[in-house]
Image (tube, rainbow, N blue to C red):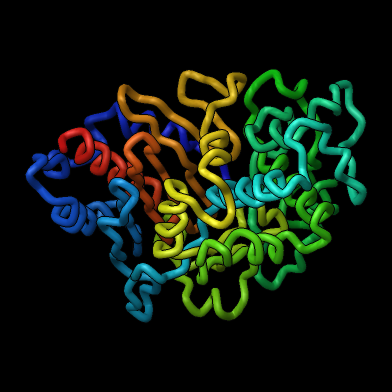
Length: 372
């Protein structure tokens, strides 16, 4: 999970007129199918992106759901709605749902010190007030915690334990970087994948289950996300696209100890189901809880956007976009919802160049919406 630039992407997407070829900005009489099917192949070819999967939600319903290009270039396997992709930091949205499910059940409190729940690891001593490190602060990246993001591990590399990762014992894959307090909590926004690793540990401490097992049982399965998992097993691998670097070379599928921050593997079809669940009653979270999650935390407000509980937020004129972006080596993804109109856009790619495709297609979607 590398540097998250979701709000920057959205700012460029909604403000720039120069990212897309002029032919991409079609009159409102064009259907979304025509817009996407006409523009996607050229955009992917120019960016050297092998495969992409795109879904569009309108008024709570999926109106476009299609794969383009190749999941595996060598075998010429095409991308489809059930092709697997890593979604990087969009994993945090699902983790936030897992946390809020436990809040709903009365097993967690958003506003008491997180160390109340921790026995296997504690925040290192610091000059800052540990009592202000709450679950609400971790979800909104206002806890003042270090470690922006995590690189993945080779599939043959033994993963460090959760406690070792928090302590900074990540082996030869990177320089050691412990999760610790570096700012006074609840005073400013500081994006932290490390904070979501603490949330991963909290879920394990409270439920007495492995994080991935709890999420499967209480979030993914109840929502009907049958091809989505924090565990990279043979079933997931059999459906997965291959990841490619910026030069178009196939690379290995990274694996993570920090699953809550960056480790989820899913499909376009499942993400579309998850998108629809944002707008309707579902077995995991109430609409009241989701509404609370998408309200911005004042201390997260910057000129480029803001944050709620797990959700990044951006306002531009009449459009309020809520969701997340995801970046891991060989993967780029975007998950954006407009809760006012119950509209949404999902893009998944299997390339480190995928952000170029995502930005172009997001602007195509935005133009289509504003012209409709």
